[in-house]
Image 1 (cartoon, rainbow, N blue to C red):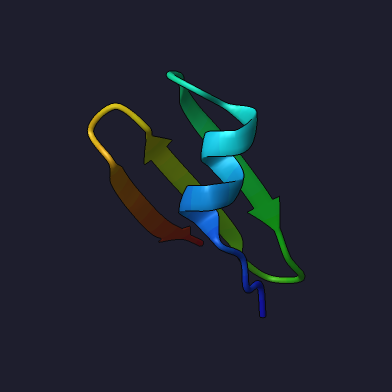
Image 2: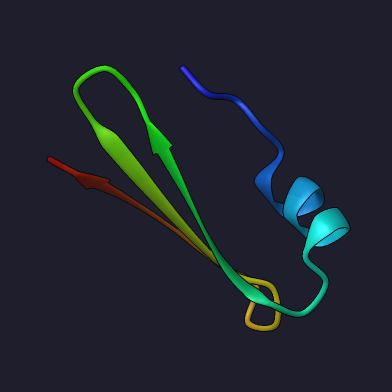
Length: 47
């Protein structure tokens, strides 16, 4: 399991950018899309 304070961490490293982080685990790929300006967080599980 991944536990992270996504809002805090991403705001520190990516100020006003739309970034995409892909975390590959054993069988699944999680795509995290974070938009700092709109303060939206989307977590999609892709098979």
